[in-house]
Length: 96
Image 1 (cartoon, rainbow, N blue to C red):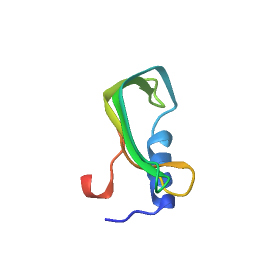
Image 2: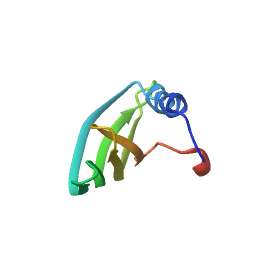
Image 3: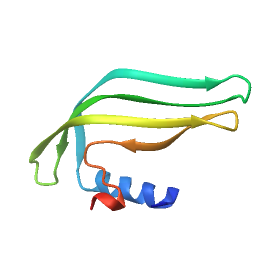
């Protein structure tokens, strides 16, 4: 399923708007893999690890969020860009 950049940003905004603030944020980067084609001058890769943070609701209640993350990225036009990601609390349309 194709999802537009605007839809991704809207979904991210929904997550951020659900909480008053985030604190005690921790990130552990476990692995980075990059495959580069020198002839074609393009590449792809991913990074993965774990994340933990406190999400504070409007009423002051704290929700501890933790889980794995994975970022998939590519370089086809001279710059790296994230093309897909998995992150706690973010849901893609097919996961709802």
